[in-house]
Image (cartoon, rainbow, N blue to C red):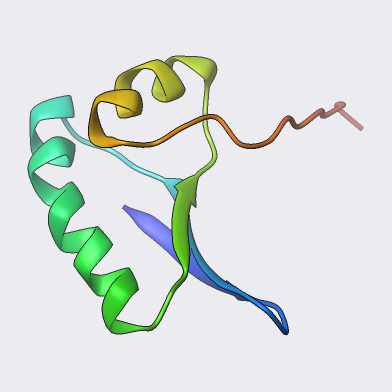
Length: 73
């Protein structure tokens, strides 16, 4: 997993934007990644990806939060 911390005056968020491997491996890694975010005083954590991720991550307590659009340039 590859991510970043996004800091604003009121919040600090851990944002995962790339992940690879099997679903099983990522599921096993998720508690460690969440603990890493808490260690760095993040208020919340999230990920950017395809819609299918929202469905899969729901079992771990994640909810859809944003909508994004894009365009090839």
